[in-house]
Picture: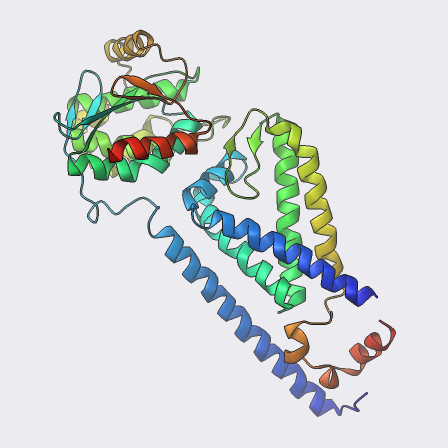
Length: 232
Length: 164
């Protein structure tokens, strides 16, 4: 045992504090760097950095990519369905890239599957942007609706004002479009519900590749298979 | 003897953290989905938490393995385990069946409820090992022993060590 004078003890405490603080700062830097590196490729891509594929209005749907693309993908989805969000976040990057390259065409067909007011509200809002805004705005709004998807069991889900704010973020500035966002659109609703029923869609997300349903043991598995098919 | 148990606790908790974090690192979006599936955190926090958690787990695990800042690392480890235990208990109580996302993956899974008891038991075990290290952070084969050598410890700590 060493005999410590009060001075020596204080010096020792200060030394320990300095070492500890230094290491903590270093570890924080390691974590920050790691987060930055791993997030770089898969967070929401900067729209300016990735090529935005050409989109156009389909039959109550949004079509992304050229009509002569060799692989045709159709996605039936519900804006409140967590599985759809999972599929969206794990397929969006490569689908948009492949569509921009011309190797794939994706048709997004949102409809209402879940018996929840928000599901219908989001669908009506998206229909307004699709029909009265531009296809590029509809695509961005569609992506944002998934990025900002509320919890399925949340008691208070986003209302019309929140959806309008999201549409503004998607580039919608026309007050007529923003006004239309909040009104039900029975004709659009009936058309998309009928389309899903006729296609035999029983759950969401349902993915068709060249007209045939694509299966998977999990959403990640489905996304991986879709990536393979989209690559050609 | 107790100090050797500390080494074991460091190795077990450290390996689990490093593996759990490393499996999630390549898929930050999956990690966010896993965090969201608990439907507990405010939505705006799910992104940051999902992105930071894997890296935090790897670093905490590495600290425990190396015996670097063992006590602070063990505190973080214990706090994280308590959060996970609360999370799993909460989804179980609400009847939400999700893949816990403990070692990657995550999201809804209809058969997950059956695994909750075992997952809770595992996390309680890891929590106890972490708490042990919070109380007794001094262990052999630790970087801490080089940074804060025994010869320069305060008298009280020396006294502790004699009886350890």
